Length: 103
Image (cartoon, rainbow, N blue to C red):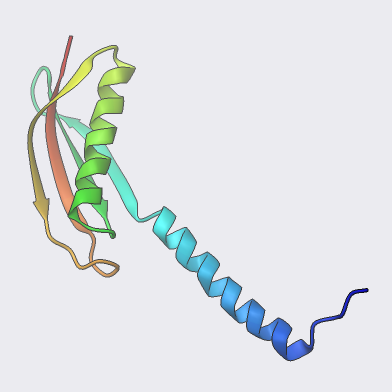
């Protein structure tokens, strides 16, 4: 035997689920990788940003650099990195990763 939910309870559940789903979507899209830019013959730079903190932005940049080199059958060697602070959830932190693709 099932009991129908009263309209008020149904509305409360709906008001709880919709913002939670929106927050989840925001968190899943919180890290954004940038475009890989060639600086020299075998030296590249990638920028990344994250609304979750400096470490997440830097990690996203390193993952993107590694994937870039793997697509070319090479191995990524990081040559430098810089990060700028952000405010979690408000201003994204930005990271720049410099790397080489080596054999």
